[in-house]
Amino acid sequence: MSQTKRLVLATGNAGKLREMSEILQPLGWDVLAQKDFFSDEVDETGLSFIENAILKARFASEKTGLPAIADDSGIEVSALKGRPGIYSARYSADEFGDAANDETNLQKLLQEMLGQENRNASYYCAMVYVEHAEDPTPVIGLGRWYGEILNEKLGDGGFGYDPIFWVEELQKSAAQLAKEEKNRISHRAQALNALTMQLRRGA
Image 1 (tube, rainbow, N blue to C red):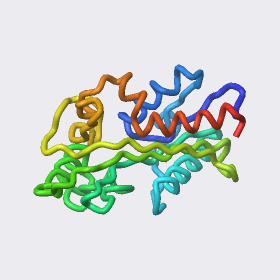
Image 2 (image 1 turned 180 degrees about the horizontal axis):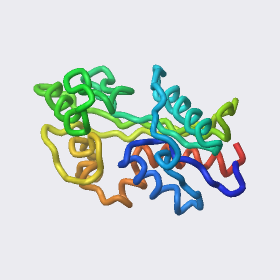
Image 3 (image 1 turned 45 degrees about the horizontal axis):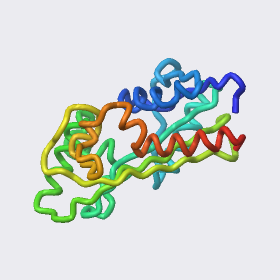
């Protein structure tokens, strides 16, 4: 791991950038945003969250010459056989094209869940660190956050599918959680904690 602990965070998603920076900065990382270096995106051609996270991390490291952390995450719904999965961020692109966004994705999922009794779902995150673009041993942290899909939106915090993701043990939607609370228990927090534990051990 770089002695200065400078790295680029390989995401163009403002919500992810804010959330991950809030987790990383207290750990002593000098977190630099991808947008400060380049604007193009790598094609996410992987067939899994892990593959896509590795692609994004290598791309960011190649562009910047810095170590990079990237994540690929999404929501998996049991009644939909794991969909949207790796397509969570662009789930409604088939209907809305480039105009697809968090709200259109969320509405599509609600529509598909009409009449479904099984509401079980989980957020999944694969987080990857590479020391350089050709790093042969990427460090990988994984996280999964279990919940249920609501019938309508609840709360105005978070991003993505948070307003319809019900966290049973807290009796709140993910969008109703305080940032500090979400950053302790979310799939992304779990994955990042798993990743940083390995980095601290010199993985």
